[in-house]
Image (cartoon, rainbow, N blue to C red; front, side, top):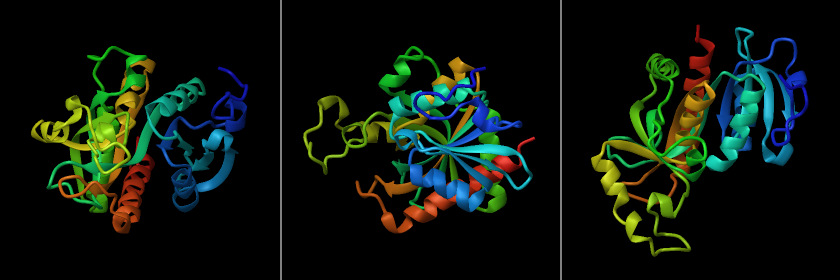
Length: 257
């Protein structure tokens, strides 16, 4: 086990104290990592803001240590952070993100708990073959679903499309590039027919890393856009969706055996 500060995340084993955490709550947005630490956890100790990858050592109300950390946007950045967290002994990672629903019955403001991912990500291909399964840990996933039930928060459990790009990869045409490649035209409807619930940009790589690196991973995302009606993020309900995802993740972690 290394005690040096790792190059990207900016902290090392010695910074984690005598009872180092084994679980990390991982957000793409550094402001969300700070929000989780300050509003939902206790005994917050900033670890690093290196490269915008803000990380905080915290405790749960039961005294269990936990990290609130930032992965950055997209799978390449996440792959670096997860690799370094694993070097420091992290054994469970829950991604806390946002997503776009592609099913009419998955509304903005609800949450999606990913059981597995259709992984269309280049970073993941450097870790395992295309056909390697991108599956969430069943025990963490059940813990998230149970938390949502007990908190009476609307949740949807199923398969996520995890892709590399926000615009082209999610078939958005209201952007600087309205001309999509033929392979992407109609892909959202195809995924809809395959009963895929949502788009996001990280969990497929996270799940493959979990299988290869031997740790447990799960993902819960707040739904911030309903792609059956619009390409635009619903800002008026974004905070609600994120709050619900955070509450579910923190409750689940606090009640893990």
